[in-house]
Amino acid sequence: MINIIKKYKILCDIILNIVATALPLLTLQIVVLPLMATTLSEDKYGYLLSITSLITIVSVTLGNSLNNIRLLEQYNYSSKGYCGDFNIILLIEVIGNIFFVLIGLRFLGEPLTPVEIFLIVLYSVFTIMREYYIVNYRIKLNYIAIVWNNIALIGGYIIGYFIYTIFNIWIAPYLVGTLFGLMHVLYKNELIYEPLLRTKLFKPSAYKTIILCMAGILSNALAYSDRLLIYPILGGKSVAIYFAAYQLF
Image 1 (cartoon, rainbow, N blue to C red):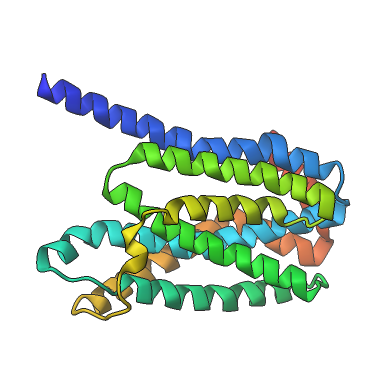
Image 2: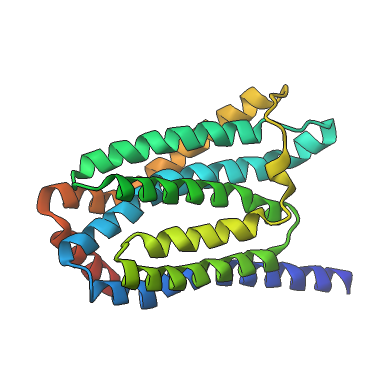
């Protein structure tokens, strides 16, 4: 009977994980992006898709890699009574993330205002922080909280879309959505209070994070770099057409 209950719980957790991952993607792909495509120019819409690809390759990969390493090393740290390292690594990742995002914006070549650059960088920082700190739910096996976090993300996407329609801030849906998700993650999250201290496990943890980041960047680059390469060569309109065709198939 106990084994049946455990198997049932594992199955429920798997389903919750799938639902939590799918809901924000469906909201973007079915609701927000099609609505934005009707009001944005083809070039600007293609640029938006290129920017989100850049953030996925850099920011999502960095934050998610640290998330996985923290989950794998949690028992090692807690059993030895160590507390530290990960907020230092996160800070290093945030600084590196800002550098690579700025390089990516330079590579795309689109003229942006300082405000647009700031908002894009802010979106990338929110992304990397949310991707890491959500590990708190995974450590506690609180998959329902992950679902609620993604619901907060969806709410932010929708509110961000209305902000876009009023103020014409095209990055608003992603920025506000990620902000809402981050605020939910940080609420009563003890990981943010961990000290900026190095422990004896810092070097192996940092090394594992670097290796996983490199593997993740290579993997995501294969999936998303096509948009980054098409935009500087053929322009935003071609990216938009490519994305639409990709979605159909």
